[in-house]
Length: 181
Image (cartoon, rainbow, N blue to C red):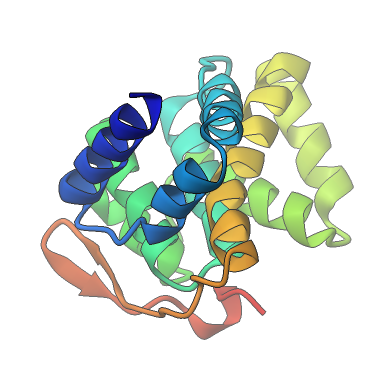
C-alpha cells in the first residue's frame, strides 16, 4: 500500500512538472522508508522564510545548476515562478545578466557554497549583514535541497539528459560558464 501511494505521488509530480522521475520510482521500489526519509529531508530544508523569496528561489536554482544541466534546473525555475518570482529575473540569472540584487545574491551564494569558490566568505558576510544568520541558513538549506535531486538521479544512473530551460514560455540558453562540470 505504501509503495502504491509513493508511486502515485511521484506520478503526480511527473505530470505537474512534465518531468521523468524514474529514479524516484526506483527509490520507492528499493526502499519506501528511504524514499520517505529523502522526501522528509527535502521538505524540511525547503520550509523556511528567513530571507526574501527571490533570494531563496534563486538559491534553489543556483543549487540545482551546480549539479544539473537541465531537468532539475527546470523544476527549480518552475517552482520559483509558482512562488511568485518574476520569470525575467530567472532568465537573467541563467543568462548571467544583471538582475534583482536579492535574487543575484541568493544565486551567487548557492553557487559559491556548493562549488567552494573564493568569494564565499564575502557573500556569507553580506547575507548575514542583510538577513542575519537565520537568513544565511535559509539560503544554505535551499541550495543544499536543490542539489539533492540531481545527486540522487546521478547515483541511480538516470542523469543523462541535458535540455534548455523554459521560463515564462520562452527557452533560455543557460550561460555555459554556469553549467555543471
